[in-house]
Length: 122
Image (cartoon, helix red, strand yellow):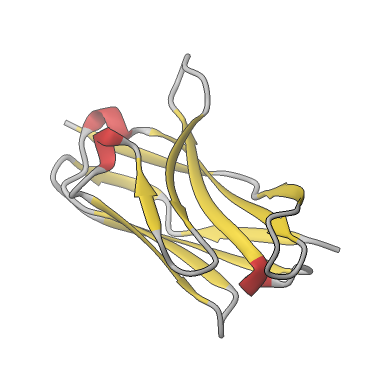
């Protein structure tokens, strides 16, 4: 049984901060590329940030210099630290795990969390 359990969402004022957490179970976490996606109201789901198996990170332009993705392999947890939040960051945020076969580039499958609501008020 694979589970990605998210926490940390909520309602904050513009300029505030939140840290999202995603605890994974049922996968070999260290072999997984982790990511955060978000889906704003009326819009398509978009990739926000990724962190590779080796710790390399990438961000959508709108999150650069404000968001930080990190992972703790000992805790099987990925985080998204969100600072200087803006109303346009309002969305349902989803944790995603892309599993690979060992250290290879052979992708297996994606897993998704249940989503957590982040609302930023002006």
